[in-house]
Length: 224
Image (cartoon, rainbow, N blue to C red; front, side):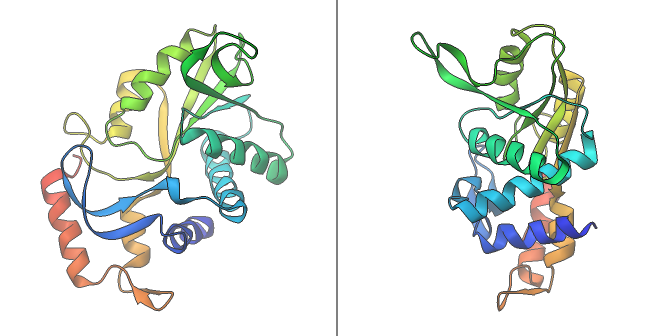
């Protein structure tokens, strides 16, 4: 596993973004782990988060794209932080764009926030996590309506590796439905590999008991 991925896993733990216990998801599933990207709130945290996303995007999609699109709302700060990090790390100017939940009819009017999208633009969508693909379902037509643009792919922070609407993971379903790639900085398998029986800040987050709960969860909800 790449060094930045190992660091990112520990970064999620340090920021209390990745937690282990018992959580009820929007889907109603009882999950032994939970990720909340809304807890990245300081300048240092957002700077580091942008760097991890930029490295993962560079690994998966290179530099030949024009826009990072971060769906409202959590995608907005992630998109801004990552465009800054991409410039600092690779010297490449990437524009950021987001959608508004409601179109604005005065001043900086329209459905988009940040850079307009124009014909020929190559776009990478950036999100925190996806379990059902609902956000892409809303975002895809907004992007397509802007003109002759090409979506290269999606980048999320964590691939939960559980079933989406069918038997496959949400990221696999997105690939099949929309025809573009979908990747994550890290997968839950990589998280387990790195944290199992490892002490982080004086605590072992994934011991045998937690590992058994995660295994049972994937027995029930794991993607095929």
